[in-house]
Amino acid sequence: MSQFNPTYAFDNNSEYREIENIIGTPYNIHLLPIHILESTLFKCWQNLFPEETEYCIRDKLFVKDFSIKSQEDLDRIIDADYELGFNQDARKEILKNIELFWKEDSNSAPIQLPQKDYSIFANQVRVLLNEGDEMALVSCMKYGYIELFNYIYERENSNIIRDKAFNAHSLLHYAFLNGHIEMVKRGIEIGLPILHVLIKPAIDSGNAEIFKLLFENNIEVYYNGTVTICQYAPLEMFKIFLDYYIHKLGNNPSNLILYAVKNLTNLKELVLNNDVSLAKSWGNKFAYELLDECILYSVDLEVVLFVEHHFEITIQEFKEYYNRNYSKHYYVSIYVIHNDNYELYNYLYSNGFKVDNEILTHVTKYRRHRITPALVKKHMNECFYEEE
Image 1 (cartoon, one colour):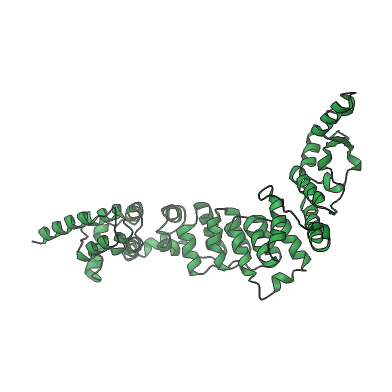
Image 2 (cartoon, one colour):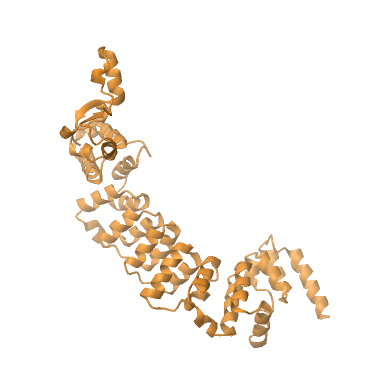
């Protein structure tokens, strides 16, 4: 027998009651209420002991139903949920009865809320009684309170989502940002729109499955969204976007190279594992434009070296080309100075890019720590003697 039955353990009543308080009173499982049979703890127990016909529950956790007539009833139900883990339908019923008790029963005064963070469901009860419906729905999206969200949504017959005075579009933002996939799916299910502004919060969530939902639900990705994905998406997310961009939209991956220079991992994925032969056919002018973007965004030196190697050009050739055709980039870019990019600064300087008083002023004014005023002065003097 899997459970220790106190009935057979002691004849002494006090000892019997002590043991009963520890492991609980045995109940025939066929007589248990449905909310216990469908609780997480009971299901786990039944998987372990499928032949058992009795289940022990401590008296303080045994609730026949969810009616609430006193603070003690409320506390007992919260404790029971904490231990047993009721399902979503049960929790919605509890929320309904708590709100009814609070609104209609004078015995609720003064009502005591569950301790903060006692459990996820206890926090939902706190939100229900502390926040108005609109802010409560936002909290649901932020923290993943699916039962409370469904309770409010169904209680209001979905009208609160349709209310033009309520910015329902912002709800999915919180769900994406905080990585609550169940809330994201529920929001999509009830018709909340998938907008391009959700791309960055989906990336920030760090959840590739959530990011994938954007493309499974026909999001329109505009220029800003494309740039954001190329620059900030982790590799797993970037691959999801590439699949969409190439196979769903039918676009050439070469078009993304300029956007990916700020993310070496994505840039390598793009040019090494996809067909970007079109980019090479554009010739050196495109490669020079790519290096121009690298300097403009003050990328890591590794990116510049990778571009030089892959497109078979050098930074000296780039400098000479732009100096000859556009009279630009003969000096180290102010963007490199602003980002205090010491490695790229030294690389550019060692390859013939000069520095001047404007750079020295910028370094001093913005208190750069890696590219110091003394270093710039040294290089200015070296340039001066070279010109002489």
